[in-house]
Length: 352
Image (cartoon, rainbow, N blue to C red; front, top):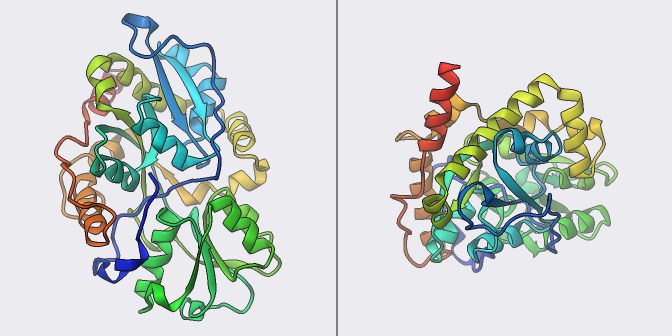
């Protein structure tokens, strides 16, 4: 979902810094890598294959572990795992119904629903706790120092939101910087080449950006706790037709987390390879992504009055999107979250 006109109404940011943002993980082109020879989605019975999209974000690399270690098979679900070089392309592909599920952020899901898509959040993968960063060149030591500087980020994605949140916190407006709208990979490359003074990127592009000599992190998603949740999102059509496959996917996710805990070295090697970074570089991402447990999932799906509640966070983001003109009307969020699959897994785990 490509965003438009974000800068025009940025002054309408919510006073609360707990505003929900999304950790979009885009790159410029789509490149899918399938995990087998699937049956068409929609076939009856066990032949139904889940077409799942994912892209470059540490909280989604466990899907590669699930495929490589045959955890999908153990969970009795057939999966066509599709890797997207371009995160935004994965969102568009889900909206077009060309895949059944995608790994994506709450912000992007709400935007898609506002545009007419019918999607369902069935699982919280993680929260970003530092792996989305604003990185600056030497000589920039505060957010105030960004005034008049060239700052690159992909327009409308999480790191653009993160940048605007930081500006707001420092009493600056988007007009105070020279914003350069570049796709995330190109933004990181432009920063390393010295073409811009600062950049907003997510892991693993943070590793690339920090290769510029004397560059450093100015602030990150760590300063905005709970504001960047990532999810497993299905089309409502698939959930209605194949709830057993959705359940198997949720079961496979938690089984994969168990595998990673039991086999950390092997799992990290798989995830680092998928991310195109070294094992040591991947380990540096550990504190920047908080993988949700079953208990944390259950809590997140409950109604609440702060950003730890998905329903509250979704209302805040919906209000923000309409305020800044990214959505013409507030989408219907009453059916956005479906926690029955997490609850069913929790019940089975408790009995076990």
